[in-house]
Length: 223
Image (tube, rainbow, N blue to C red; front, side, top):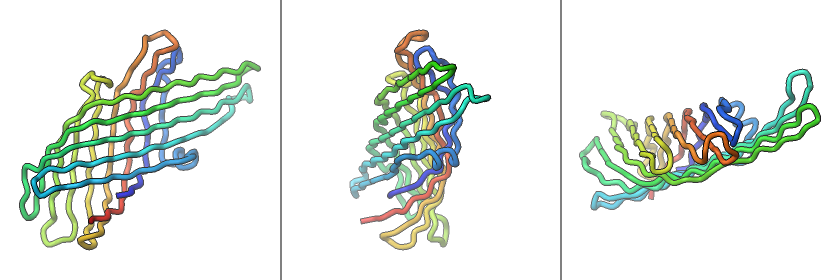
């Protein structure tokens, strides 16, 4: 399923001694600043009740602006890449309801770059990190009565202090089954993470505490 998310990113970041930098990016900002991006999902299922899925997305954003009064300029780049790999077990399957429990790993790769010129002085801050965290979750698929539509809901929590302090993911929406081979999914996704590395007050300190959320639409191909 290739899909499109119209994302907002809200939260804070710390880059070295630059602390509590507010992040507030809406879909208009992202699409106007998007250099490159991709979002896709793959799932496999066996009649034994076991299955797997992979979900990968990345956004490469850049923008620039001028300080008030023309005192200087600044440019910023944000790269966010997320890969989730899960194994699931179907615990309920009847004519209209499917429930899965799942667990897996989520890999994050974040890079933030800020280049500012103020009062004739130029400064560049480049920092980021990548980490892998475990998660566990539950998924529901419910066929609506006398309809080609189904309701979908899945959610997981993770991090557990292994890499990030805490992370969570929620996906909900509806799927229109045009045929046995083709469907359209519309819904909403929210993904949060609270990650910190390095030591506060030093150049190695990195914090990424954000929520990425927004409506999602995907085209499902079944084989």
